[in-house]
Length: 500
Image (cartoon, rainbow, N blue to C red; front, side):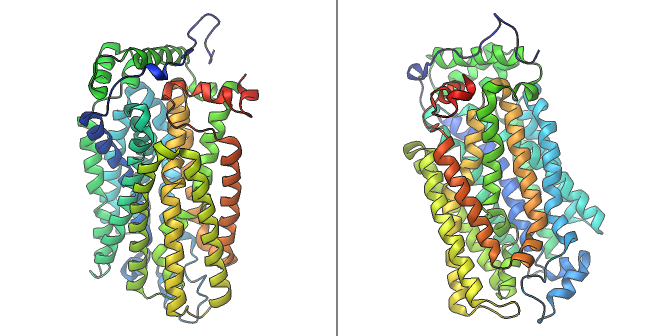
């Protein structure tokens, strides 16, 4: 039976947070930094896809219809890139990642977090090689699918690794190393695109092939990193887990934290079907968050801007070089804003950043929509003044996302699940994220064509909903030990009625 039997393990039954000892050691910081490289795979692909799909040589080879359409000056600005094959190039990766993240869950649980990190790195290297050498569209899409497998495994394992390795009082900041690596990957990809678009006709191959670099680092890191104490103890290696915990906390006085992990592991090992168990009433709040947090993160519209930034800016009348430069600017802004979140998340808490970020994003989306609705026609161009204003407002939107929903959309789900459903919960988070990334990626160009400037109001409406959701239903997780999160739901005004 999924939930164990009467008289069996009960998990963590006592709050011991005040008894946790230890300090931030160089060992844990280095481990988290190396593991977080996994986020750069996700970021590099987001950044590289949009740039490559705006390169003439790439479009001419694989998407000749789009290439011809963009050459027609009279073509509707909002619709010139509306092509489902082109959208499939971008979004096929995320559908593959969705499936891979589900497959990764039992591997991460049975063989450890490092095993999934290594699998992800190898898959991504294969995908980068296929894409860089692609001679036809099927080969290109196959490469994208292998990249998706790598992202599915990496995104499933890395946030868990970071949450379990980090000390409680710095878990938010260290977990955000994943988002920082993602944003640096986006920025790096944008800068590479800016350079390779001048290398005709093979620059796009270099852009796609360089994805192998972070994959190699992730694979080597996965081999060299220590396993998390939580995973070791869950798999029966209690003494080894104890030694790792002592090393990463810099003290031998780890009894309270060790006991929490042991209690959680005993319950985890009594549960044979975590995906079935996660549906039980007592796990309902975590399941809701695992579904809604990644859904809302994508419905901010950020991935649409980052995927298609060069295409979007070209549609708005920017020249090719100017569009790539503008998207590189947004990538730099996103990377920089993540440092704000790292500095404040364990001081102000998760809720404050999510709510303030939501307000700023809504305002920015509405402003962009008004500018485009009033000043931009289907077949015209924005004036230089309004073009600059659009870029500035989009950058302010990206800043708000970078300190709020960007990192916290990953951090919160990775820290709220009990050990027995943690791997399954993270798989659901990743699968939902990649599903909506796929949906938005596949439909954005069509939505842009249909909604025109209204696409920004569409996303603003969703941001309003998610901000209200956080205000009402997300408890503050700052400073709560990862194995004691269950007590948080029992104290919440709404969830206590569900989990009782």
